[in-house]
Image (cartoon, rainbow, N blue to C red; front, side, top):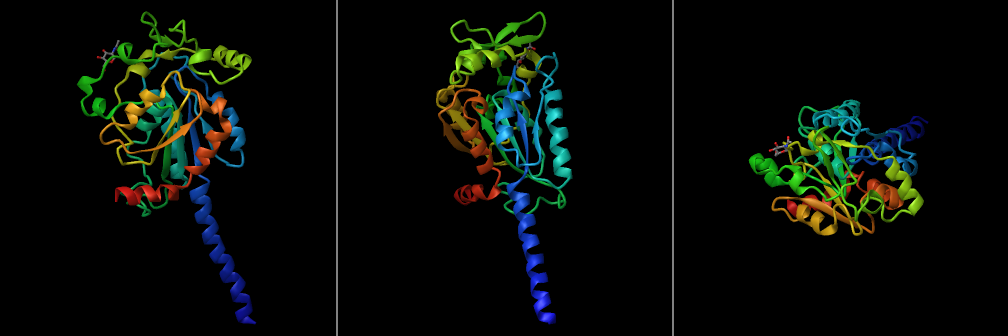
Amino acid sequence: MQFSLSIPVFVCAFLDVILAADVRSSNPAIIMVPGAFHSPQVFDKVKHQLSQDKFLDPIALPSVGHVVGRQPDIEAVKSVLYKHLNAGRDVVLVGNSYGCTVIGEAVKGAPRYSASSSSALVAGSKARGRIVSLIYLAGYIPTIQEVDHPETKQDIHFVSPALFKYHDNTGEVTSDGDKDLPPQKAFYNLLPTKEADYWTSKLSFSSFDALNATATYIPYAGDFNVVYVVGSQDKSVPPAWAQTFIDQPGARFTVEHLDADHVSMLSKPKEVTDLIVKYSKHSVFRHYYDTIG
Ligand SMILES: *[C@@H]1O[C@H](CO)[C@@H](O)[C@H](O)[C@H]1NC(C)=O
């Protein structure tokens, strides 16, 4: 009698452990950060597809619609990030374009799953969650060179996409700088015309100081699991440009290719959702750990 009672109790306790471990690794909080000029609504389609996940946090960047530096953008992400980590919850950060620059800076010093930490908890962070991955959708990101040698970083006037239009008197940058490539074509070339017009009407200015700031940290040189998603029909960060980020000496990206434009969350929400689900499990990076030792 005693024996037959203890087996179910034991099995339940065992299942609890398995389920807890599974929830922890497969259902992390997802922080979503849009690019310059964009509102967090660009993640609505993906958010809807992910809605069984409890913690979905699209972030409104302070530098969109306000003239501020980059730090408020970073702080906006960090406050949500640490809320989850301190609650013991793992986190995936998804960025689009300039949003990738912001998440890359926000994770500096944060607890992580990575090659060096393996599956052991980072010292001193026993009860905390960890960062599973960063997903760069068409990342417009700092290079290793400009972080290692900030004096070599160029003013964005000289290195930004042609669509950036500078309003030097106000500190604002808008996305209508290229007559041949209006936002409808630069960002939303795979959307139906009406929808491309709708999202274009939602664009705001971005703050020059936020876009031109110098990054202080590179998360993709081995510290974190970083996935770079290249859009084969992206007109803002075209595949050849994305490849220059990927090919940097010392860069360690997991690379994915989508038949997508620049704002893939709107044109390919299903595919983007699938990638988020895939890279929400730190175990998918294990093969990668093996490869780099
Ligand atoms: C933009 O950044 C560059 C390089 O960091 C810096 O030299 C330049 O002064 C900045 N431009 C403005 C207008 O602040």
